[in-house]
Image 1 (cartoon, rainbow, N blue to C red):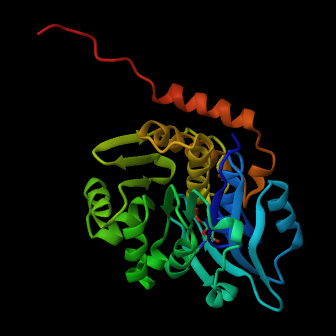
Image 2: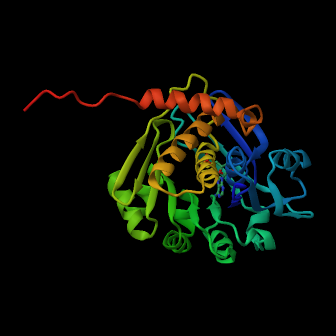
Amino acid sequence: MPVSPVLIVGSMALDSVRTPMGSVTDALGGAADYSGVAASFFAPVQLVGVVGSDFPPEHLEYLKSRGIDLAGVQTVEGGKTFRWAGYYDFDLNVAHTLDTQLNVFADFQPSLPQNYKNAKYVFLANIDPELQLQVLTQVESPKLTVCDTMNFWIEGKRDALVEVLKRVDIAFMNDAEARQLTGQLSVIKAAKALQEMGPKTVIIKKGEHGALLFSGDTHFAAPSYPLEDIADPTGAGDTFAGGFIGYVASQDDTSVATLKKAVIYGSVLASYNVEDFSLNRMRTLTKADIRARYRAFQEIAHFEALEDVGA
Ligand code: AMP
């Protein structure tokens, strides 16, 4: 059986990033690019987004080389690509935004190509929640819808984001953003509050400390991988979510058991992504690398059952 494609909408960006390990200027980034490339290790990807004529053609070539369908990507002649500038200090879980330029995203009206409309797996990656809604309404009968967001939209487009949450099956959010949106300090209470807003399943990303999955009453904690080489955490969340939904699509199964494995695959992809700036590490990553680190995650998380010490 051919694997169902994953439809992804989100930012396609040129990022300028500084970390204690170095910096890049106008490098390939954006939630759709990171998550699309991650998902492409497991499933075909259909991308929806917009770039300006300043977007280097070699970036589009790279996405195509991953088998990603770019029929839903518009290029605005004379327009400028979305840009994000930020930096990280030694707390790599906190991205400090210096500048967000929506540029061509400000006037973007997504219109799905006909063959995207019957997508079964949909990932609304980080972008204006109004655009996420416009894409969602064009998809005819999805089997699984997943969204992600960030503080910029929680602060600027809260009502639209609440609408998105009502309509998706799974929401990704990092711990600080889940607290910010729900007003709960406890991550557990924040996840429950998010579930009450709509999504049956909530996945809380805790950066280099792993991830938590809440599905109905099930709670699953994914470990973090003890990385020796970290260059740039940018895109870790998007890569995590892309690996997650790509794996779920590859199994065509949304049971909790599959979602748990998908959380580990997402963590594997994200752990590789942070080893280099931009999407550079993804360029050399192989399926064998992914499998090897999946096994390493399993080792880290495994422990024996409590011995029976009698009454
Ligand atoms: P993360 O996976 O959370 O590290 O996401 C990093 C990516 O988010 C960067 O490549 C940015 O281009 C992108 N980004 C930053 N701000 C926004 C925003 N307001 N909307 C959409 N994407 C953004």
